[in-house]
Image (cartoon, rainbow, N blue to C red; front, side, top):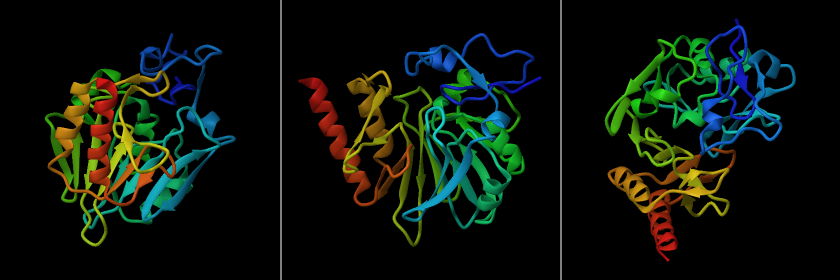
Amino acid sequence: MIHHMCRQCGVQYAASATPPASCPICNDGRQYVRWAGQDWTTMEELARDHKVVISDEDGVLSIIVEPAFAIGQRALLAETPDGNLLWDSVCLVTDEAVAALTARGPVKAMAISHPHYYSVIVEWSRALGNIPIYIHEGDRQWVTRPDSSIVFWSGETRQILPDLTLIRCGGHFEGGTVCHWARKDKPNVLLAGDIVQVVMDRRYVSFMYSYPNLWPLNARAVKHIAKALEPFDYDQVYSAFRNMRILEDGKGAVARSVDRYLKAIAD
């Protein structure tokens, strides 16, 4: 029995003797099936020529797989006095990466922004001591490897540690989630995945239903994201990919981006 992993999105599936017939996440309109056709690998195979790279990005620890694989997103480590959170996930777990993360203090939980980044979340949970994985119940149907470590939370917010609050924004997925990280001696951070995506000029963000297929969100969805974030103060925004971050006036940048977006789709 093998835990097959989709080569296109990097999401791992429940153990089976043969690969699944297809990847529902890639068959969905927000993603796509690779041009050469559906193909599968395993985390063990990936480890032969890939590695996990951990780096400091202006005070926030970033975790990626190199060479880039599948969607290529990064995970981030939110460090707090009450324990740390692994935000989002990457497609490979190594002993070295686990040692580097736990050296920064106990990782108490994981939280995932949306299904495209489920990757090998159960492998990470087990490697870190069977820690809980927080996923909004709105995305329950997309979980491809069910496990007792997964906590489906409901409602609009969920505090998982004193300084860490999950916020359901929706948009990209029904359960699309960001995390507000309150810091006492540094600027507050919004860990945003690509529910709120920092764009290349790093002064604005944007919002999409599908990024690869250039399918925008409607006005109602964007207004809901703005409303969900309004109660929270933050200066920095870290989104899904390496170096994509806003380090000053993050809340203002999001507000200006919402206005710009809504004007653009109204014309």
